[in-house]
Image (tube, rainbow, N blue to C red; front, side, top):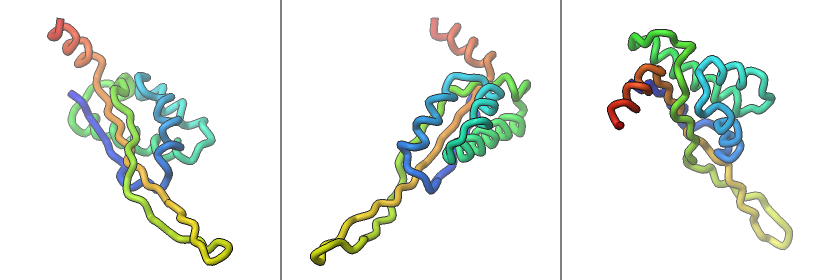
Length: 121
């Protein structure tokens, strides 16, 4: 069974968080947390918070061995944008887009992955 957590309207551009998310996809939950803990990026704190929430959701719903869970889905989608206008020379305006992100992390137990692979074969 898959356990997910979504951090919606994170105040960071999706391209900045996308680099961080690519590092943890496919790792175990504990390896992912260790990787994120030592990254200097601001987005790593947001992804770490979301991953901890997904692990907490798994524990709450009765998953065994929360540390051995595998990150099966980690993605970042674009959210809405604040649009601001900064004055420029000769009466022109320059558009500033302040972007938001939706961060999604899903974890699954290794036993469920093996059972799913056997049923497909």
